[in-house]
Every structure is written in structure tokens, then in C-alpha cells.
Image (cartoon, rainbow, N blue to C red):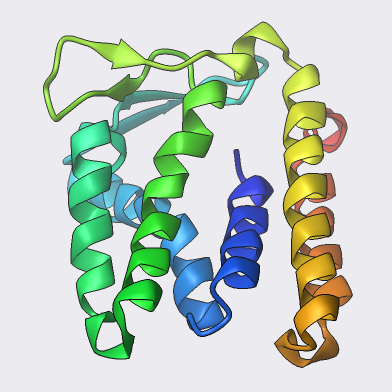
Length: 184
């Protein structure tokens, strides 16, 4: 899941308009930010796999993407927002944890329950459906963006830019399509 994380952030924003949009959008991608840092530090490992969907193997991502650490990162990230109220802090924390929930259907048994756990989960849609995963994620994006736009119109908020925000998310998804990856 890539652009789908941002659709989730928009849906969370629609549900909790007081939460800062930047915090929700950073939150849904926070585990990947940590992953990038941890790979550079040698704490986590990834291998490029050209021609095999999704193009890489996540060899060890337990510190950024395990179930337990997703909860820890969500609590830590949300702690910076408690002064804005419980509802905002919970929304921001859920944005971080939603990353794990949305990765679970896509990842192929590389999501540990906790760091160095022998149990790893993931439904593996990236590998089971080398092109179909893209359509599954598009459906999720459609649902998240629809909720965001409908809610924005109903409560008259988000600066009148809800359709533009959704267009950016869809564009990110199109750029990440398996067809464009083959063309590269």
C-alpha cells in the first residue's frame, strides 16, 4: 500500500476535522519514514528484486513495521498532540497505526508481531496478485476519497480543496502502477 495510506489520512481527517492535516498525512507514512531511517542506519534490511512484484524484498522491518512497534510509534507520535485534545491525539495515533492495518493485506508474511518475533503475517497481495493489488488499492483509495469529499461538503470545511487532495492521491497511485513500473 502506498497512495492508499494517504487516502486513509484524508478519511481520518474527514472523521476528525480538528486534527492537523499535515500530522495525519505524516502519521500515515510515519512507519515508512522510520523504515527509511532504519535502513540507512543498518537496523532494517531491504533487497531489490527486479521483475518480482513489488520490486523489493523487505528482509527485516520489525522495528518500524511490526504490530507491537506500530502501536508504540502510534502512541509516541500521538503524544505530541495531547494538548490539542484527546480526540485529535487519538486520530493522529490511529493514522500511524492504520499503516500497519493497510500493509497487512499487501505484504507477504514480513510483518512481525514484535521485533525478532518468529511469527510474521501478511496476506501477500503484492505477490498473489502482481497487477490485481493495484486495483484493490484503487478501490480503497476510492472509498477513502469518497468519504473525504462527501464529509467535506457536508460540514463545509477543508478549504474547498477536497477534490484536489483526492486527485493528488489518485495521481500518486497511477504513478505507482505496475504498468509504469514495467515501462521504466
